[in-house]
Image (cartoon, rainbow, N blue to C red):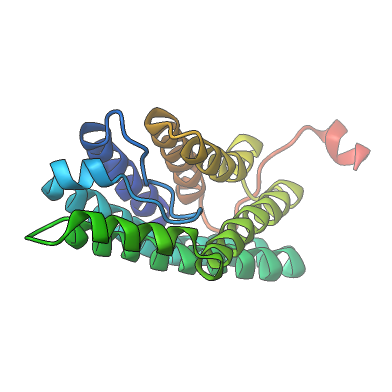
Length: 221
């Protein structure tokens, strides 16, 4: 599962690059960790790119599940409670993310063929504004954010990863959600790149290794 630490964010970066070309001037739907919202003008104008964007993001979202399980297992080996709770929350958020991304295939088909666009848009608006659906995505977003913070704490406290890489995990998740809310394609892409760098650093470390720290820091602990 170590390879998924690189593959998951790599597919997410690829999806964001596709979206950069197809959603200019439109509100993007790139974060699987927030409520679903698709850029209908971009989907209608660039259906093929919309399909590839969704497919790449779906693959990345699925791969995030084993990637987070691997990180949780690493933390659990030294800090069982942080690993179990943080891992459970993060994986819950990742699973919700997969469902969120899947709904974008529906949006892709709703604007194709001879469908009544006004009716399709109204149906999509009802779904996006439905409280019952929104709460699921909200719980998913909060779960992966809190879970990633707990895993970050475990990685840093147990010296299982460089501090920048561990912190980057949580910062990237938060930045992704904020950038999506601000409708910033560039911000979302930057958050995926940060996640790729952070998770890539974790994947590159030998199993069971710890980060060497100055003796003064150890004595201070």
